[in-house]
Image (cartoon, rainbow, N blue to C red; front, top):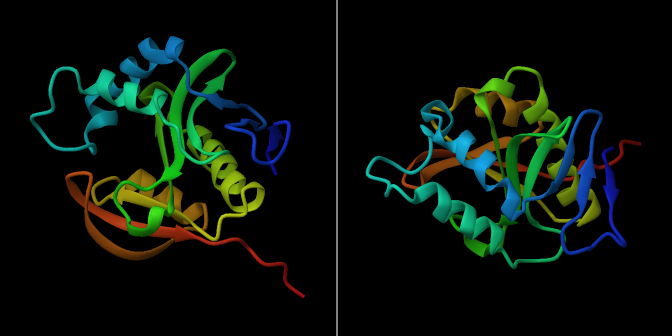
Length: 182
């Protein structure tokens, strides 16, 4: 299980550590690296439709930095060897009813294909399910994002429906805490 650096399980937003990654709270000085990731059309192709304003990336970063949600949740930077390789979140869903916890992950194209998204998403999922003791963690994956569908399956998420979310067609997934077998 990933290590969590906190003063307690419910620290405002902990730094998580895996074998290769430091998964730390997103901060203002990450802006340029996050812009670079989301400026890549391959990475941003599954985000809300055409006609995004020119400022959409900075607007998104501003929203992530301003997050003031439940303790232990937030937006993280995935850092490998002092290089920001991706970002992710665990936060109350803006798309699903009931303030359920929603996970998301994005990895820069140059860093894909090495298991880093899996490593980061496992750490965030487990933080939600086991440290925060959430009853479930939900994921919304754009229908066309086959890599994220495969990742959700590897992470133990189960597809439970479909819908229009974030301006496009998505599959809805849920992960529940594992119970020890007898």
